[in-house]
Image 1 (tube, rainbow, N blue to C red):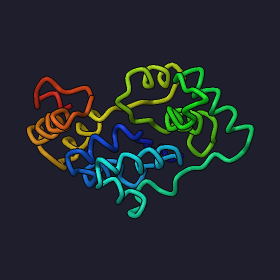
Image 2: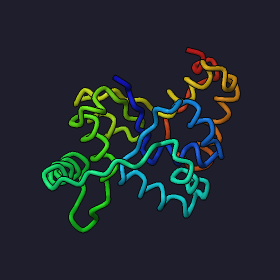
Image 3: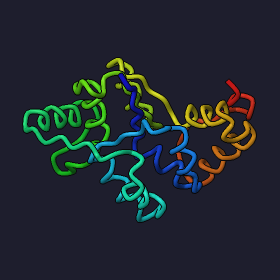
Length: 179
């Protein structure tokens, strides 16, 4: 069974902020997926980070996964409210996180898939549910190991993300990206 990789909007924005969606695409290696709510979030974020517009057109995250069964929509909303603090007056807030966790946990085709986020609380919940999680730092590490960029380039890239106002866990040195 294929393990798909589900980056959330924070991760997409991290790479878009430094114009390196190409690197993210390479690391995901044809296994990237997203839900309809994450696609919506990325579309909204494209107002600030225009390169995100290319995600839908390029298709390397696949067709956005849409949850359309009423019983599943109710379960997603229960997760959104109870776990992520979503409210009725902001129905799309935290919807991407809830949809992604639901799909990975409940849909057989995505069993064993990974969720990639830099949201600490969301990652904590996912880990408690048994979802394999990764962060932007792990993707940059994978790019270094695959020789898509040097450890020093990866370290600089992550510093650029932080300088662009992105909030992510940073390595203490380039050497941390070597393993």
